[in-house]
Length: 439
Image (cartoon, rainbow, N blue to C red; front, side):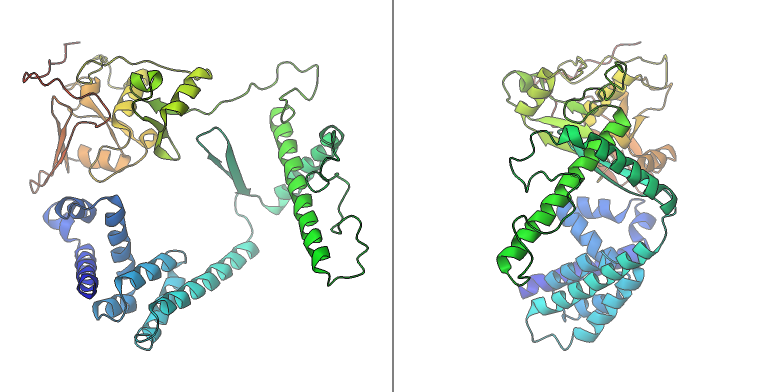
């Protein structure tokens, strides 16, 4: 195990030098992560861990030196790097200085203590930064929306003093207006639903005479938590009513005469699956979203979405996954053709990249108009990879069976990719797949 730890230190040190000298880009024309993935056959988790440690230690000389000299272990370094990535540059330098001070003195004590001290310092620095952020005025109003696969979601945001106060007042006013309707049925559980006018933090039946009564304090805490939960629910319902003009839960218009309110919106995702998934559930289905990228769902979920009336688009493919396109009539693929490319590729097809499909460009393998706008000549590329290919820093060759070969013209470095694993395999007749028909 000690030898393994030293090998890890040598590997990280080699990566740091390669990154500092830009050796891979200079000699091979490809980033170091691709060389690492291909040469050492590293999968995403290991590759990301090594690169994260190497890039962080390149800016932390004390930790780097202690790791090389064996004063800290591979496990300790990973913990230190994890903590360092939660703070800013100045905080990282303070963590580096702490390790320089503690590495030798902690050599004979329990290994976790050094990581605990680093975590404690990082928590302090994060708290100080949060406190400074709280004192810093909001520069721009913004709202962040984070949807989930099931159609639910959460959101948060920042508002300046000019807009935050009237925004909250409008929500609370609407909550007070809706309170009589929302209060129907109150009384089943006084800690579950609290009246809008109830702002007391004292539990019912308690006169407050014994502030040291553990039971009383527990009940007060439960009551306060229930009160805050009820307020949160009322505000959520009020915000929904303000935005949509409908009551939360029933989706009925607030104004009975208003029948032309905003229609209910459903989440938009792309679901790609084999038809067997919708019949007998023999294969998984892939959900492609802009925020989450590629996620695998069960066949039951896929069938339920279709059964619930989800808008579906069927794209026919032949036995080798070819889709009829639009040939050389246009360079920009229509929406249905782009969806077919997304369903086939699932994510960025550039080496060592998994950028979400919805964030990628649709690239012509052979530039248009020499190459047609058909699925067999189209692929998903992130903007960065697309730019490198356009500048001829990469050359892409797509083979009849759907496999790809990426080549760096400067050095001849190659990365081979097999056909998409989730599509039907080509026929095993020994014959070449049929060529694409002329437009």
